Image 1: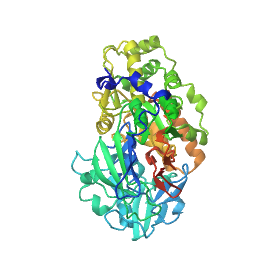
Image 2: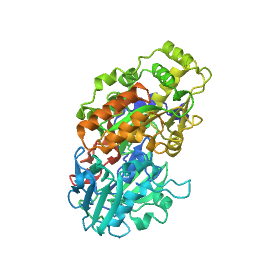
Image 3: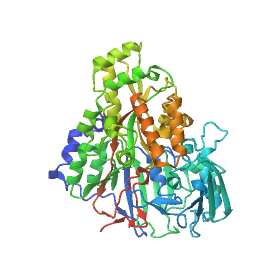
Image 4: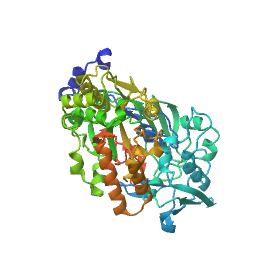
Length: 542
């Protein structure tokens, strides 16, 4: 029995209620409420998964980042597309010493929500914290984001408004790293765990109440140091697992914004008189990863056998469009095109579905009795239905290949992350998830595959000294042609060895009530939804 059936509201009834005949039945309800004594409105935003933590130093998921980005700011931020523009910084960074020194001047106006000025010491602390760990093993201080800053050798603060980054090597994407959020040292350092639930930032919204994995309520910071200020008084981010329920909630007025409109519901959403789908290309990558550390999936034959068990081409064509497209490498398609990667060659690497060939490879590998576990981030009340579909397709193929005990294991995001970086086959053999990063190949290769990121962001534990050396050499080089060659060779090997099975690249897609004006999407998923910036200010029409 599905969740909707348990509640007495079936899938058929929900779909029927989205039809044109009943389009205005509940038009009197609205997620927009005028706040007494305020100048704006309050909005309710539904996410498939919601935030687990709001401390940007340790954030490891897009849903958490999407809430935190309303509260925190970086030295630089994304403007239109992937163009960077100063936020806390006063102008462009001064780059010298062969690309190993970046000096950034701070604006004098920025303040944190506790009234303290944003200083160079806060910036220094924010970029050093991801590399630190607390003695308390239950609280991992910044580990998931260490890869973003471990090229930094030292950080100097000549004065309160100057920060000097000295790099160990000329990291070609360091401009992107400078978008990391800045936190107040005095508020976070004494108690990082409390800060993660009740943070203080310098952004246009402040945290009113946060219940991890359930909801986050933000209110406009009236004393925000920059302009324009937000026009919306109150934001509430909530979790809604069902894509159908999210779309329905636009019609009933329960939600004003819903993230991730399911592909088969795009037309129904656009057909609503007061709602539409807004979408943009993303830099997200969805994949099936293998635990190469132990158990059957540590064998290449087994991974290739699993590849024979599922037809992702067919699934993406029939299920995903128009909400995304098939991908054949860890690199988002626009990044692969920009770097002139051999996408057509990579496209020929995956096996065509053939259960008999899968059985043969399993037998050749000596795998007979096996209960394969496929981990996916989800729970009873939240999750991504598309990820579940992909995981279940793998399970079905494995079942047909003779493994009747194949299972899809659902975990809340924080538990999921800990499971899939443990390297233990008792926790997982495979995992389906999504990765979002900045537009540089290193951001998709180093954290997902290099041995230095094992136990942090790398859950595959793949062993290949030649590949590891190439990844590191590409990361440390600022010569484009050299980097391109190294990434082409590395990715080809990773695909041939079936370390990942790339699945699809989703679009950033939101269902939006039409009276929400000036709503714009960024290709960077963690930047969405955006409510105020230098070139936009979301308002609610009368």
